Length: 98
Image 1 (cartoon, one colour):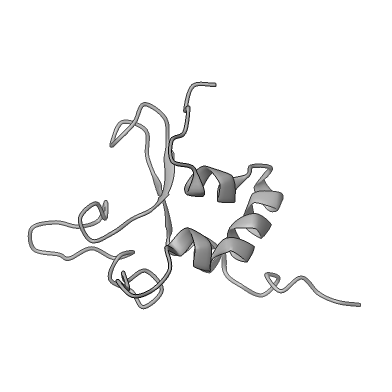
Image 2 (cartoon, one colour):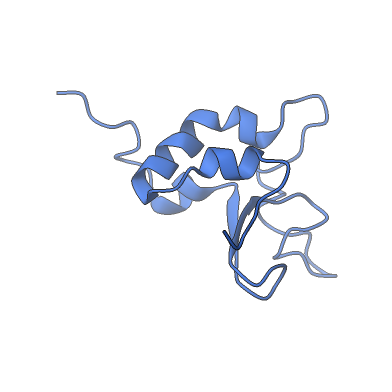
Protein backbone atom coordinates (compact mmCIF):
# COMPACT_ATOMS: atom_id res chain seq x y z
CA UNK A 1 0.00 0.00 0.00
CA UNK A 2 1.29 3.45 -0.94
CA UNK A 3 0.82 6.06 1.77
CA UNK A 4 -0.04 9.65 0.95
CA UNK A 5 3.22 11.66 1.07
CA UNK A 6 1.46 14.20 3.30
CA UNK A 7 0.51 11.64 5.94
CA UNK A 8 3.38 12.41 8.29
CA UNK A 9 3.60 16.17 7.78
CA UNK A 10 2.25 18.38 10.59
CA UNK A 11 -0.60 20.67 9.50
CA UNK A 12 1.54 23.77 9.98
CA UNK A 13 4.03 22.32 7.48
CA UNK A 14 1.22 21.63 5.02
CA UNK A 15 0.29 25.29 5.12
CA UNK A 16 3.73 26.95 5.24
CA UNK A 17 4.54 29.34 3.59
CA UNK A 18 0.84 29.94 2.94
CA UNK A 19 -0.78 32.33 5.38
CA UNK A 20 -4.46 32.62 6.19
CA UNK A 21 -5.07 36.31 6.88
CA UNK A 22 -8.21 36.86 8.97
CA UNK A 23 -11.19 38.80 7.65
CA UNK A 24 -10.85 42.52 8.18
CA UNK A 25 -7.05 42.71 7.88
CA UNK A 26 -6.91 43.09 4.07
CA UNK A 27 -10.33 42.02 2.80
CA UNK A 28 -13.86 41.44 4.11
CA UNK A 29 -13.26 37.68 3.87
CA UNK A 30 -10.30 35.58 5.04
CA UNK A 31 -7.49 35.60 2.47
CA UNK A 32 -5.21 32.65 1.74
CA UNK A 33 -1.99 34.04 0.36
CA UNK A 34 1.74 33.67 0.10
CA UNK A 35 3.19 36.66 1.88
CA UNK A 36 6.36 38.57 1.22
CA UNK A 37 8.55 40.65 3.51
CA UNK A 38 6.43 43.77 2.90
CA UNK A 39 3.03 42.25 3.77
CA UNK A 40 3.95 39.51 6.27
CA UNK A 41 1.05 39.83 8.75
CA UNK A 42 3.37 39.04 11.66
CA UNK A 43 5.84 41.77 10.75
CA UNK A 44 6.15 44.55 13.31
CA UNK A 45 8.49 47.48 13.61
CA UNK A 46 10.73 45.41 15.90
CA UNK A 47 10.15 42.01 14.21
CA UNK A 48 10.86 41.13 10.57
CA UNK A 49 7.96 38.65 10.36
CA UNK A 50 7.82 34.89 10.24
CA UNK A 51 6.47 33.37 7.03
CA UNK A 52 8.56 35.61 4.79
CA UNK A 53 11.78 35.00 6.77
CA UNK A 54 11.92 31.21 7.10
CA UNK A 55 13.85 29.13 4.61
CA UNK A 56 10.63 28.00 2.88
CA UNK A 57 9.12 31.48 2.84
CA UNK A 58 12.07 33.67 1.84
CA UNK A 59 11.89 35.43 -1.48
CA UNK A 60 14.44 34.37 -4.10
CA UNK A 61 14.65 36.96 -6.86
CA UNK A 62 16.22 34.43 -9.23
CA UNK A 63 13.67 31.74 -8.38
CA UNK A 64 10.16 30.95 -9.56
CA UNK A 65 7.06 32.34 -7.83
CA UNK A 66 6.07 30.32 -4.77
CA UNK A 67 2.72 29.28 -6.25
CA UNK A 68 4.63 27.62 -9.11
CA UNK A 69 7.24 25.93 -6.92
CA UNK A 70 4.54 24.65 -4.56
CA UNK A 71 2.13 23.54 -7.31
CA UNK A 72 1.85 19.88 -6.24
CA UNK A 73 1.47 20.80 -2.56
CA UNK A 74 -1.18 23.42 -3.31
CA UNK A 75 -3.15 21.06 -5.52
CA UNK A 76 -3.05 18.29 -2.90
CA UNK A 77 -4.03 20.63 -0.07
CA UNK A 78 -6.86 21.95 -2.27
CA UNK A 79 -8.12 18.40 -2.82
CA UNK A 80 -8.17 17.84 0.93
CA UNK A 81 -10.12 21.01 1.68
CA UNK A 82 -12.38 21.09 -1.40
CA UNK A 83 -10.96 24.26 -2.96
CA UNK A 84 -8.78 24.94 -5.96
CA UNK A 85 -6.06 26.68 -3.97
CA UNK A 86 -3.60 26.56 -6.84
CA UNK A 87 -6.01 28.43 -9.13
CA UNK A 88 -6.80 30.96 -6.41
CA UNK A 89 -3.15 31.73 -5.70
CA UNK A 90 -2.09 31.81 -9.34
CA UNK A 91 -5.00 33.96 -10.56
CA UNK A 92 -4.34 37.55 -11.54
CA UNK A 93 -7.58 38.57 -9.84
CA UNK A 94 -10.00 36.76 -7.57
CA UNK A 95 -13.69 37.58 -7.24
CA UNK A 96 -14.09 37.06 -3.49
CA UNK A 97 -17.87 37.48 -3.62
CA UNK A 98 -18.94 35.00 -6.29
